[in-house]
Every structure is written in structure tokens, then in C-alpha cells.
Length: 97
Image (cartoon, rainbow, N blue to C red; front, side):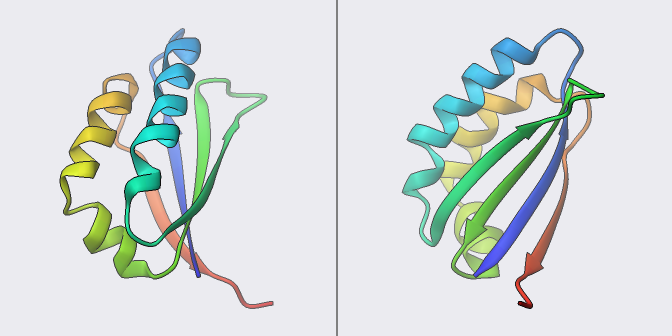
């Protein structure tokens, strides 16, 4: 399994609208992606416009090819992209222990 970590910064004052949009995207879009295992979203305490999205994928390619190169990604970005203050920083991790 691969863990995707996305560090998301949104426009100030848009927390409620972003959270509604990403809840919708997490409930209706990303679960349809091949290899999707699950996801969690965390909000910054000191920086409330900062979110960390953790997505678990079966393989790296399920995210980088299967999801990001599919129409689902455009649907996903259409819902949450308008809130971004900057493009999210995304990295992938594998479990060691």
C-alpha cells in the first residue's frame, strides 16, 4: 500500500466552503478510483487554512496513472481546486514497519 500526503493551502476565510466541497469529493469522486483504499483529512490548528489530506492507494500507479490521468481527477479538482491558494504539495510514502 502507498500513502499519498497532500499539503493543501486554501484561500483565507474559505474553510467551511472547502470542507463541504472536499467532503463531497471524498464521498462521491475518489472512492470510484481504481486502487483507492481510504482517506483522511486534517486541518491545521495554528494555520486553519492548511489541510493535510492522506490517501491510501493499493499502488503508486493507482494514484499517478489511474486517478490523475482519468476524468475522475478533473471532477475532483473541479470541486476542490477553486479553493487552493497554491498548488498542493504531494508526496508518496511506503510503510516500513
